[in-house]
Length: 137
Image 1 (cartoon, helix red, strand yellow):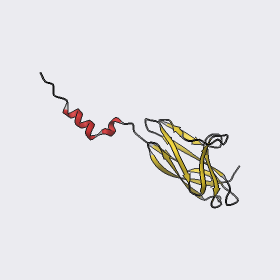
Image 2: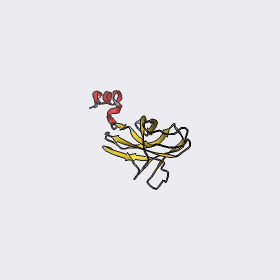
Image 3: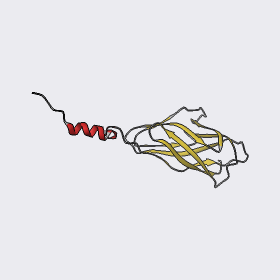
Image 4: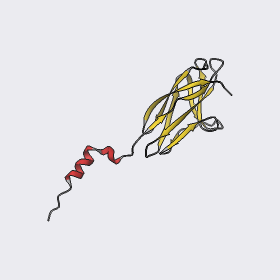
């Protein structure tokens, strides 16, 4: 007796392959950046990253175009090459943890201004956000 494969199951896999993969749902809140006094100053940026998906994602690149270089650093200032955002979690880039370091700014970061930045994730791709300038501590 010859068995006929379940054609409905095969069709479902062909037509909807994304059903087999994890849902991706990464967002960022507007964050903050310390104001600067001079052009060329270095400053720090902070932002919250939310992963409402059911799989972890990895922050792999970051850029704030107001600076020559944007680095992701840990609390001690050591540069990081990536940052995992666990599934169902919120990760806050903050002064007492990982945060963005904007080096050699092209303009002064004036109180109340907004600095556009982009974050690139392994699965979610490119996500933009703004950092609102606040007084430095």
